[in-house]
Length: 204
Image (tube, rainbow, N blue to C red; front, side):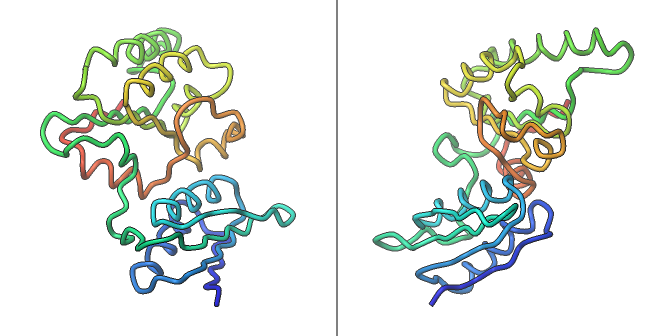
């Protein structure tokens, strides 16, 4: 029997939350989730993969039907899902999450602010191993997309174990979801969970 969830029309992070709630109460062998945007498809697919499901999706017009089939062995309980778990160090003091909410730093001249923000991103590596996650939201997601000078900088951070992610709803809003060049698509549930687990959060 296939458990079906209809998450069409729901905004981030509601589709992932609905899947999480279902898996908290039962462990179906197969689950199918309908969504109507690619950001939700990516977020739900990744969540299911963390729960030990093999995932594929079907395109149905402008919508997606995500199908997860439980793999061999016992899956990880839904409550244990931790975004970026592969790179996640122990939580606590010294583990820094940076939240980038704009393309420029500070208030005043936007041209100067753009230069300052780019220089900030280039200098982030100086935080060393304490730097855990860099998350981009709102217009900040443009740093992760094709054509941004910041892409090589962020790729270097990712190669050194920093978890880089960009808000899927924001990428879709600016029509650059298909232009993501570094990191992975994230959602508000993962962002809030990351804030809880970080020792400190720097917001720009």
